[in-house]
Length: 213
Image (cartoon, rainbow, N blue to C red; front, side, top):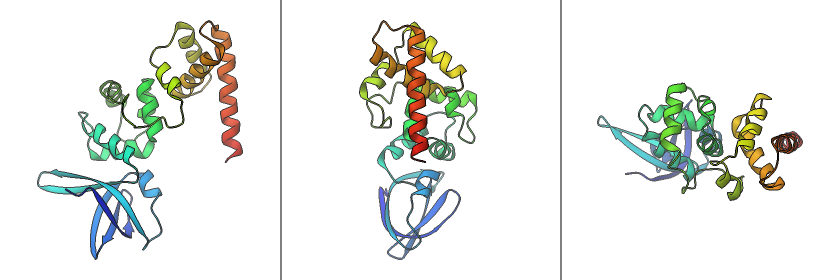
């Protein structure tokens, strides 16, 4: 089984690349995120590899980072998710997005990937929600306290999240903003206060993103 390849970038396609290892060209399938991080043609690089053998056919899948490969393995364990759909999910969503979608049960976020409808998105969320807690699969930017607080939301927090999503924010963004607001304001904070603080945090996040854009 091939677990890693190091060589020269020979060519690329919509969902694949060829890496030249000592004169032997290996075709490797990859997500759009991994393909976007490849070096210029002819330069040396390495990829972590997942080898799949099905119907007497061997296919190689490459990943620029370990947690993307971990997600790929988890996704393949879900009925209806093959390698093509798994790569589509990893192209459309970052590891952080996937983790937040599972923690917040945001099926709409999952349907961003090509080939993933509401029914399959629901199955992905249901089957993986309890499997990601102890794995290093995402949420690199959120504090452990925020992550730990997401699954058990109070009534006021749920109402604040609903209000923010009605204003056009994604559920994953609203959940994290309200969880952080609750930490700052304390457990007795009113729904209105959580909404105001959440809007403030989301506005700061947008302003920060614009200044770096």
